Length: 227
Image: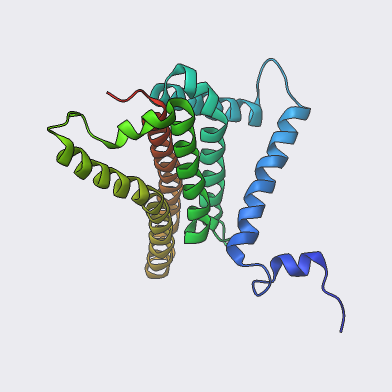
């Protein structure tokens, strides 16, 4: 039996799942674009460099506006990477023959869980054990101890649900987009595709922005001072 080549293994869904292959392809696309921009960097941005600088500045502003100047700049690489990676993955679903890796719950969970772990880690790193105060609610006194215990349970459940909601929201919207494109494309193949394709691009951008914005808000809530 002939040995399989590396390419055969990559494109074989029985060896490497399709969503993994396209997730890797998303990373490759971003790396290639970064290398191209680096090789042709100029003081007067044009073409791809200009577009990426606009996106980068928008993500920096989003990070700083929601997390604060100090921590916003620190977490900007994470926020910008999340947005670009999700956007590229979402847009793959608009290309015939391609598959959006974000339409698989494993891909979305692989981003949501690290975000959860990162903001919890930095919450304890910044505040120490005082980070627990974020889970106790606004009223803190001996008389309010039962209420504080209740708030602690509610907050813990809320935090544990965050990676689940982040994962399912992005996954569900990408699946819904694909189904809508498929059904309407079959019903009215000569009229609908262009309009639906534009709608698909909008959905891809919005969902990438929503995931990124929520991640920034979760980080902001962890590193800010409890009141």
